[in-house]
Image (tube, rainbow, N blue to C red):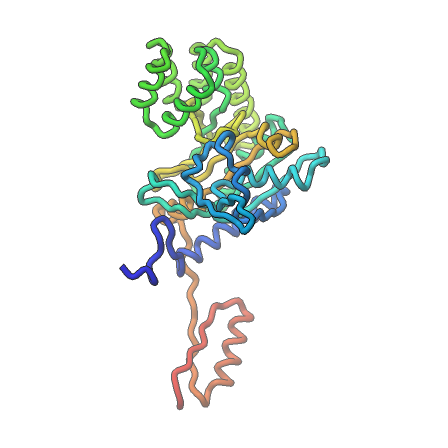
Length: 370
């Protein structure tokens, strides 16, 4: 294989119609975020290793692209924007007090061998809202995500809403240590239920409890079915999580967006920083989520700022794939051509300028001497 012309596994060249459509949907997403009052921020492509420590990011060190600077500090290409934005807010807005709305776009990098056939460099666009811990902030971020997806031309999608504390409360109720909970959470997040059940068995969890944990982790339903979960748990943490989800749904009904919402009590993620409402957007044509988000009230404190926070990221490449597969992408704009030879250059150039000023895309092509 000639490595001079091929890309490494997990990255690829993007050009032509695909890149044009990608730029279009990025523009639509950016416009929607600005309409909601979010301002742009651009964090660096690489950070110190500690910004993405596994204790709160949930990302294993072996899945990071690591390198060293001249002073010997360990640096990593960002695998996730959220810790970066939390660091930025702690640095630039330590005494702000009022809500802070930031949006971003860029690539993330994950060096995971289990991502066979998937990209290791992916584009994300996201929005983060700080210093507002209300249920209205939860609902507004979900409403913004709905508007973002609709703006790109996507029509048929669902946003599943869960709560990070729901599963945590059940694990506390059954006496699981945090290390055991994190291990089981990671297995269920990967849909590896057999390994999760074995892990619970090794932890000495009673069979009836194992069945409840697995049953709840597989729950997906509507608002009425969500309330049936109250009869399956007794701890206050999980009950409060159900109530919060229901209240968010009530606010979304005022937005008129309830048709886009369902509930997933078993929504789990590898990211350990989520503390409250979590949500993921799905559509047909792609197997993975096209957007993910949630509340992470304790993460900014890791960088010295105690403030509530919630946000989401759109996986632009997955969204682009969905639009193409659902044939919702826009046709490429026609590029007109104007040819010229040595004698006709001046008149051809005049015509091209007129067309370009009128908004047309025009290529000026030399055909050779007269």
